[in-house]
Structure formats: C-alpha cells, structure tokens
Image 1: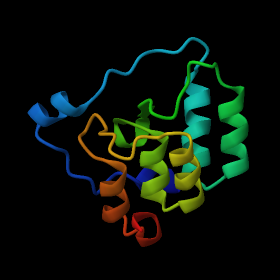
Image 2: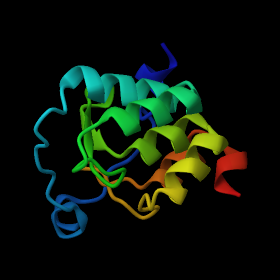
Image 3: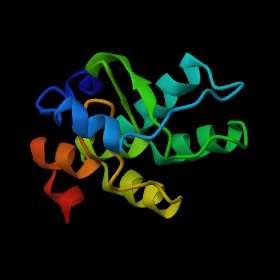
Image 4: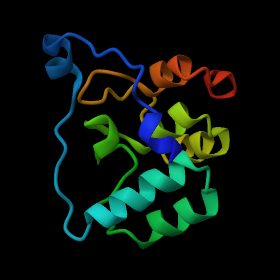
Length: 126
C-alpha cells in the first residue's frame, strides 16, 4: 500500500516549535478509526468521489482542518498532508476549496507543502 511510505522522508521540527505551532485535536462523536482510515485512504489513492461521499456522511462537526491519526507514520496529519504527499492534485484542490489549512503543522512538525516537496510531487507544489 502506497500510503505506508508517504511520510517516511519527513524531518520534524524541534519539539519546542511543534508545541507552538500545533493546534489541539479534539474528538468528534461518531468519527471512528474506520472513518479515519477510509478518509486517509481516499486521499492517498486519489479517490475524489469517495472522499466527497465520506466527508458528506460525517458528523457536522468534522472539518478538513483536523489532524487525524496516521498509524503508518505514527503522526497526526490532515487530509491535505496525505493528498500532498501522494501528489493527488485534484484532492488537494478540493480540500483547499473546503478551507483546508495549507500551513497546518502535523504533530511531527511537517506541513503539507513540505511533504509534497520531500516526495517530489511537483504538480502539487505548483
């Protein structure tokens, strides 16, 4: 599965910077690990229709700015982090249209743009 290798080349920020730049992630009633896995998978695999369907079916408190647990990287990332790392431009555009934060810092201190650059995803960087 390609998703397992997405974040492996990322170098984190020093811990003091991470604390200053990371927002609190809160729990949403009804958002399960299965939902999270499906959302991240749709982003990693470029399944835009599936992503739209999944987001529409989630509780109204869900938003694309949230950090979600990404087990393969042992990090908490946004959907935009995954789409950028995987080079899925259509997903990136859709998430930005939903007000995804392009400067969002993961718990390990990386941004979506950083992951796109590390993974040589030139189309997403543009």
